[in-house]
Image (tube, rainbow, N blue to C red; front, top):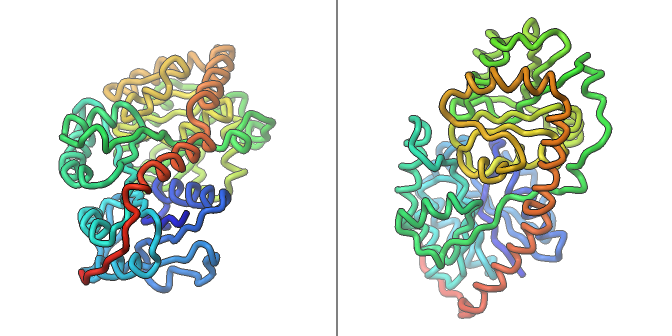
Length: 383
């Protein structure tokens, strides 16, 4: 099967990771993949594999949140699809105006269209971040109804889109998955490296919606002691300001973005607990990776994370995160048997519901389901 994948290769975010891992898995299973993404010509290496050609779409602005394409990008996309003649277009939605043109383009070309809808959300409007994300869902809902299928990560996300008018038959739940062979419990040198008896970790972007400062405040107020260390892994616009206020004197180490996967796995294996204090989320891949490594996990009930952790971790309310963590951090420090039990539960939950192989199985089944209805000749019109 030939899949035309429309997604992101930069800047780094969950959408980038999702696209890279899914397309690599599809290639490994013998499918052909064409990767269409927003980039400048100088960003491409020209070294794409023969069975995974790249198509560059021009843009005016690109960030981790949204992309503004040039006026000619829809024409370039339509011409590329007409030339490639894929069996299916799969859009890992980039939050750009082009997302709204895709149904029209694919309908004209007679190509089935699947979307993965990533934007973080909260099941209740409890803060500015969640209300802003709700507006995104309201804006997208009428257009998602025109896609052949829309992949969401949880029942909560499905219910939100149903309330906004997306037909149930258009929605399919395929959660994020993790490679449970690679992300697994094992030996780690992390505690020796950081001279810690107890190690806690946050891994993700340092952005307002991630609410990292609530964790930092709780850590400072908890007075965890010299043998406890908190690792902050990631980068973002708030990093410089927060790092200057919460540094090594508090047992906090800022590691920045770590590209090496094995290094991240070592850190997750060595940590007593992984903490995710987000105000809004989709379904955190970092959370699933930590769970797969057998690390005890604490996360807010934003997005689907609470659904993932139910009876397998500690679920925080998005309101009053600092107060909750101020109580929980010393408890986890003083009772390692709790973190051990939670780590075992976390690993088991991933094995039951969130393996990457299961994710790809479901995706292939979805492609097979919708393809027969679109077996008609490709037409082309200029956009």
